[in-house]
Length: 196
Image (cartoon, rainbow, N blue to C red):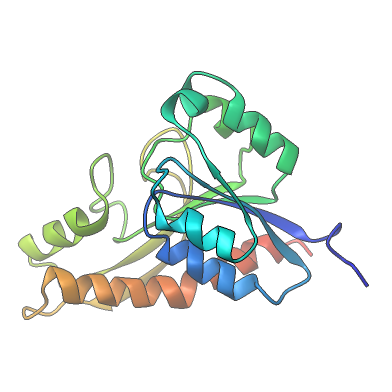
């Protein structure tokens, strides 16, 4: 029986390698109740587009004009009618037209324990460097709703790891990536089916 019409739909936005996007794709790949409708990127060379193509998922590139100065991306999303928009390493701010249209349907993952180490310019290794410089005892990931400010939407879930004096940016990044791999797809699953 084809249940694709009743499947929950996800659109993933990513800017780079797409490790989180990959985890999400693998988590749902054998499921009939969830469909990845599109993987979208603002980076034409992003590995995530190639990976989506390999998994026969629609992959779409867009530029700054399409996102901020037209309704092009908005129309693509409205056509897809996603149940959830997932920002998985997507570095641009979501514009007002998309935030308004999909209020309460956009989530992001951040590689730190917000409200610490969030905001513009705080992504990837910049976050881990700051955590280590400040000799924090713990770090982690925050999954949160997206609003008009970087990393300020309501927290959905946080997961923590210990930071040791011997940790480097590389080892801390690996710890954070393990948390992302373990928890992000599960939290997406819970959000999609919380009202079922």
